[in-house]
Image (cartoon, rainbow, N blue to C red; front, side, top):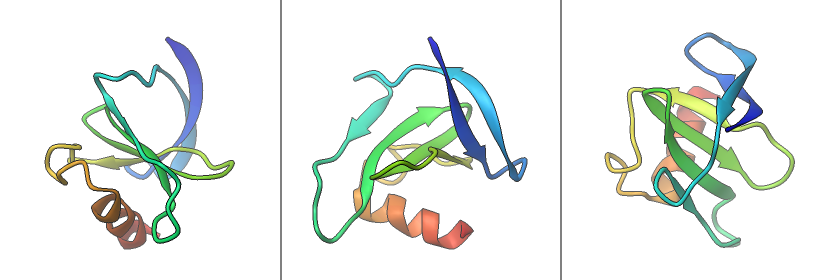
Length: 83
């Protein structure tokens, strides 16, 4: 495990957590012009969504990769709902 900084929407702040992105818990996406999601991961009872570029992963509670069909488009819609 390594320490990463995430934005926790449940707490409304940045926090440092121990987490490792693996093939078992993460879906990576190729760069596409239409979407800007780099990866999504099941973590901490929610979904970590990381956009491309130098951004912090954002934790969205009570949703999983399977619930959104591992969809880049649906992950982006979730981000738009909270920002």
